[in-house]
Length: 192
Image (cartoon, rainbow, N blue to C red; front, side, top):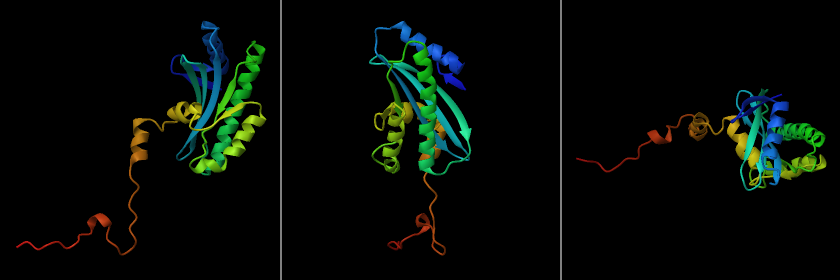
């Protein structure tokens, strides 16, 4: 699995892990959190981005991401479940390496792109249960920046082109036989 770092470019999983450990060794007295979050963008296919963030609490952090495309998954519920599974898989790999390298006590959080408002509120308990049942802390919106900000940014939703497409108004639907609303004219006072 290949990851991308805005700082170091393309990295293997092992090189990414070395960068995470190196970052923590720079200031070992500081507290750290390891955050994993996944987001997706639906188009002709589904683009998934899993972000790995090493957060030096109160002093910033670094992030890495893995991006891949999959078949189109139109169901929001299925996409959220798949996002959660991808985050858990990455967390499991990282936790194993952390334990081998003396960092088993590092807090690992799974940031979920769900919240108690909007369409995702119906599955929040299910995905939080998946994460907690796997032994990780689950963080939801509005605090789940690993998924809703970092991973979201790398899906392309935040690109100028994506923002332009997302802001484009939906085409007006005109019932058969009716003139479009913008073309209708109300009779006004006669000039003359």
